[in-house]
Image 1: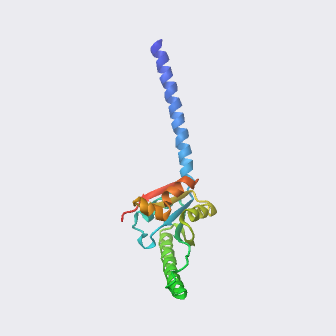
Image 2: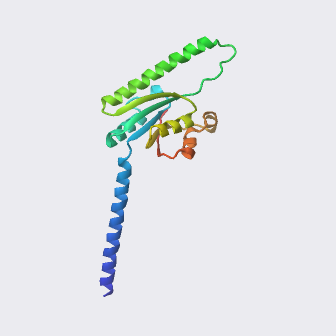
Image 3: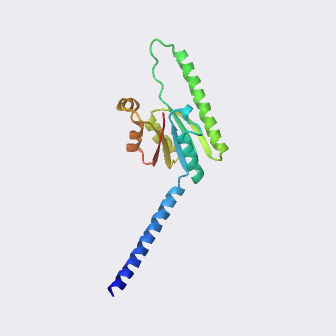
Length: 181
């Protein structure tokens, strides 16, 4: 009698765990299916190639989920030039650099499109954390992918702790990809 009750209880518990596992699996599957917009924040535009870890992982995810990819490179806001540099010379240098970065991003987006990934390149001026938050809201991003650097506290103090700033302010999932240097 006791063994029969235990057997029934185990079957009932097993069925309950099986139903729970299926519910969790279906919810997880549903979440993963919804990754339709991925924002990739590119720090060093020349290091972002199809073989780089951040782009390779993006290709993998975008292919698996048929996602649209937004390649975002953020340029810091322009500052007042030092008193000994001509503003026109500095402006020409900056515009040349921005054109180069813009072409590079478009070339990378084109390379992704050749691999059947819907990709768009964005070159935006602004503070890093605020710009990532604004652009992710604007394009209804479901996943943000960032390269994760390992630097000391001084570097973090100078660059506003990009990763930590996003972690504390961003309501969207963030994936950090280790960047080798």
